[in-house]
Length: 170
Image (cartoon, rainbow, N blue to C red; front, top):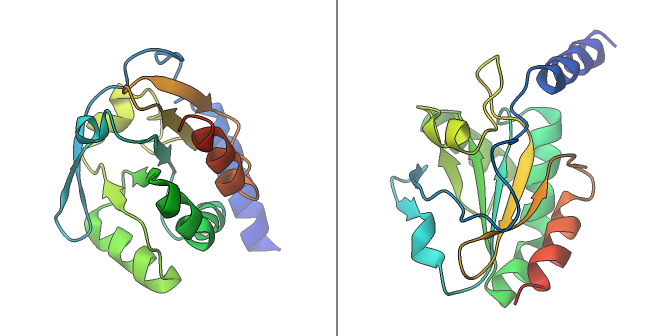
């Protein structure tokens, strides 16, 4: 019960602390970035322009209950994203070591990108006042523009929700 109370309080604090991506709008060019995954591979957003849609979902903290549920949903549905060529990137301000543990513990099969210096979270307007990324998802179309922003993410249905939206952009 104590753990639930702490998690509830943390959730309330995250919501109350800004990071709502108010600086980003649909149809705007997605801010470009280059981030590394756990293995040191660079991922540059603009490299995917002209290909298929890209899902970038920011999440607060690896291995926390909501973030785990969200990531495991993508993991379980990853084959259908991959089949359609939809790229999915999970981004947090965690360091690569924390992300490596997260990937290993839950057998995650898609890139987790570390934004430890918080520059990308800040540019996307998702960095909140306590220094974590808010749980916000951006779906980017083939031309590199923001097609959809999900600010009120439901971790139970997130994977299905973003798949349906991204599939319509093919």
